[in-house]
Each structure stands twice: as structure tokens, then as C-alpha cells.
Length: 439
Ligand code: HAX
Image (cartoon, rainbow, N blue to C red):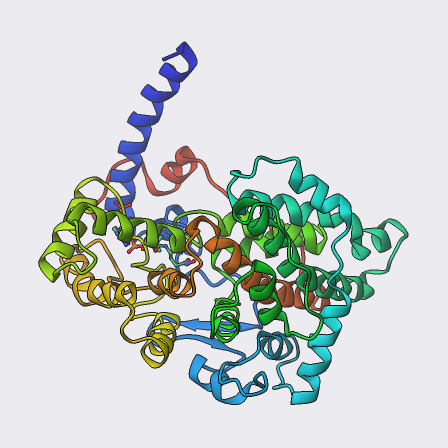
């Protein structure tokens, strides 16, 4: 260890252990308007953001502009002959707070098709990266390469008035959302498809065209993609991808830079990358157990082994939810309706039978239930999307619609630059006293 690293390691270990103990014992004490536990614990439950597009209830789960996922399935327009809502309809709802008509959605599909051009320099930028660069790294870089087209940034440099910020933000949002399937499909095909790219089909809707450009023509994959891109779109404002997008946007960075921030947050394994981690973890379990159909006992053994190694069980737990995630349930219902005998999906359901009981034994784990990521990978595997490192990019294509609709509202509402106050540990102790007090 070099001398600086050695110094840091010694200092950090001592301060971290002492501060952890201090927070444990003084956590309920008030520091200004929040408790010490909230201040030091990732701002859990602190109401400090305005987000219009959706709201999360700990027991019921997500509602988009007041509509639950089953209600969206019933009320949003569908593709001809389809049963799943079109994500275009949800975007319209999130942006306007009104359910779109069939005609509105047909218009939006055509509009996104019209705006979906990706300039050559974006592909050249991606081609300069190794094909085994993580797809989320490529996605974020690709979004930033698209930024050269930002209408907001051009308008700002030409001196646009504050009251008009929403207008070029809307234009950037529409152009960006329209181009993401093409960008993401390019990454998929260069990483996994021998660089053979597939031209968009202007007759398809946004989600179906994405599945088409990925090269997936498995029966039913277009409907699955419509459902997938709808349910992942938004999860109110405080989740890491939405908050990062909002925070970066609050400095008047344009939609491209803001979304790239959000996608870099989504890329973390405690957030959107959990979708890849779930499938990696399940495949590892099946390999170690030497079976495709593990028993409940084998699953429990593997869960306990994972926990004993100091790792999390991916796809379980949530900072806000305290019940099974309705996005998990929606995917379970989709699988029950369309492929109830799929072996991997059945393993996911068995894990659901076992995991909450085991995690429930640990007092510190506040939510033992599955989140969205516990199920999504198994659906994708069913449709032969086996390259699980790509899953978070699919999540990101969907999440862009929610966080960018919110960015348009941030501009319309004239939201200010975000600037919370931080404290030093010394400052906290000056306020609360340096002695550990049991509260
Ligand atoms: N497995 C093992 N331990 C878990 C756990 C899990 N699934 N969920 C929580 N814990 C642990 C935490 O690591 C924490 O331990 P320490 O005090 O030792 O650090 C303790 O239980 C308290 O955590 P919590 O208050 O219940 O949960 P947080 O709000 O801190 O964290 C997380 C929420 C989602 C990050 C957490 O539950 C987790 O790590 N889950 C696994 C990863 C995952 O599935 N992430 C995706 C979440 C949904 C999402 O954003 N999708 O994109």
C-alpha cells in the first residue's frame, strides 16, 4: 500500500466505525429539520422534491398521474390486436396529465419516427469503444455524443428568456426519446450481433421498432417490449436515476447531459443494474446446484451463502416500498398468461416463495419483498435476450420517458438550481454534543 493510501485507510476505518456508532445511538435526534439518521442515511423519507409525473406509495406501489399499472393496461391505447399499453400513451399522460386518444398516440408514434435520426458521428464515437465496454457505458457516451444536436443549449447561447426554457427542453426531449431505441439497438448489435445493424421499420411503434432493431423477432416480443417499456418508465422523483437527471438539469444542463447523469445512476447495481445482477445470480445458483429446477431448500442455502459473503440478494428490498413491487406482479401476471411453464420463470417464482421469509429474519432489512428487477431478466431470457449485461440499457430507454417528461415540467415550473446543505461530522457533534447519547 502506498503511503497516502495507508494514511487514508487508517483514518477512514477509525472515523467510519466511530461515526456509524454515533449515528446508531443518536439517529433519532433532530439536526435542524431532519433527524441525524435521515441526514446521514441517504435522506430517506425527506420530502424535498416536486415531481408531477408519478407518485410512489410504500404499500401500494407506483401510480402514474394517479393510475396504477393495471389501470394503465386497461386505459392506454394499444397496438392493433395487442393487449399491452403503448409507452407513447404513458409519455403523453405523464407530460399532460390527460389520457391520450388513439389518434394522439398514433401521432406521437409518427412524430418519434420522424425525429429518430441518429447522426453518423454518434455511431463513429461508439465504434471507437471496445465492443466489450459495458453497454451502459456505451449508452451514456452515446447520449452525450447526441448532445451536439441540443436545441436548448443553442437557444441558451443565443440568449433565450427564462420563461421559454420549457420549449427547447421539450424539443430536446422528443428528439432524444425518439433516437434512444436506434442508439441502444446499435450498441446491442455491435456488442452481440457481429456489428450487423438492422434498419428501423417506419411502420412499427416505438417499442416494437426497438425489438425489431435489436434483431428479435421471437413471437410476442413486440408486446413484451411494449409492456416492459411502459412499467419501467418512472418511479416518482427521489429514485437515483430521476433525481440525478433532475439535479443535473437544475443547473440548466440540457436534456442530453441530464439524461446521461440519470443513466449513470441507473447503471449502479443497487439501482437499475440489479436487473442484470439477478440473472447472473440465478444462473450462478443453477450452476452451483447442478440443476435447472432447484428445490426450496437449495434456494434457501444459496441465499444464506450469498448473505454470509457480505453481498445483497439482487432484486429484493427497496428504499420506499414495503410490499411486493406491483411492477414485479405485472411481469408475473404477463408470464402466467403467456408462458406459465417457462423453466427459468418458474425458478424466479420459487425464489419469490423463499426469499422474503429468509430476509425477514434480519431486522435491519426493511423490505424483504421483490422489486421490479427480480422478474424482468427472466422475461427477457424467455424472448431469447440472453445477453444480460444489456438489460439495464433497455430499462434506461424506458426510464428516459419519465425523467425527461419531468425535466420538461422542471423547466415549465422554473425549478431552481438544487443546493442542499451539507455538514461536517465535527459540525454535527458541535450541534448534538460529541458524547454518544442513547436516544
Ligand atoms: N439483500 C441483503 N441485504 C439487504 C437487502 C437485500 N436484498 N436489502 C437491504 N439489505 C440490507 C442493506 O444492505 C442494509 O445493510 P447495512 O446496514 O449493513 O448497510 C440494511 O439491509 C438496511 O437496508 P434497507 O434500509 O432495508 O434498504 P435501503 O433503503 O438502504 O436500500 C436497496 C434499498 C434497494 C438498495 C437494497 O434493498 C438492496 O441493496 N437491494 C438489492 C439490490 C436491488 O435489488 N436493487 C434494485 C432496487 C430497485 C431499483 O432501484 N431498481 O432499479
